[in-house]
Image (cartoon, rainbow, N blue to C red; front, side, top):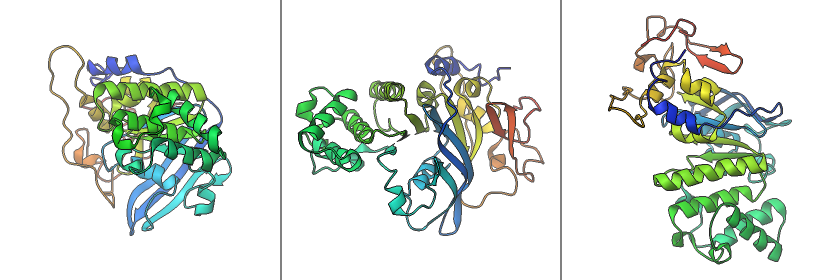
Length: 343
């Protein structure tokens, strides 16, 4: 059944961009019971997530919901004040809380991350080519002419024209979109099995955003790597990802294939996010406004979304919802699952 939110004219536009579902039985990364606390204050409350090889998974939610913290915890990029527990397994190795010597064998090589601000991620005093070649030297052992030729090929792959000349450019000589492409080239230098893109289109104009999303989708299809895309933008992840995970207050509250989640969202938070998307055509309609903000630190005794939810009742404030299975590929953390759509 399509909900009133899925009938919003913005949703067909999202669906038109959604890729077909792909499946693979072999996991690239399995996260189980992952928790993170800063100086004793919890920010992740038990994240469970499976990313299969060759699959593109989107993680969406407001700022402060734990999207980036989840993957920074996996890669050991959080400050020393962070206490990390749980599992994040790539094959037989648990990366959650692993020592640096173990993490160094995976970071940049088997797992790469594109950060959301290329202006701060790229070194302003080193040429673009030198930064790509450094990644090639560290992760693939390439040196000299072979490394430069591979760096040029990577710039060609990410769509930067006149790659040979651009190798000698500094980051300030390139546009924001070109610097983001350079970041993607550096991430691809280690030929990763899993690529994490953290808000890869932040601060880019709409045309460049579309180009970057198309590039990520093309590279993922060509290389067969797994892709995790972190974003506030449902339209962006719908264009790239096979499956979506909605995070709220340090937990995944709904997970389903992209088309299923957009047409039949079960969690009130997911419905509110979709309702906040401006329609692409038709008459003007009032957008959904979500009052307040997500809780930080210790959660309320019941559902974390209850203080902001229009569907709440007395049970929501006292019962902590577990993940309920709607179908074989659709799970949701809400006690109202199966009771019909509440508005």
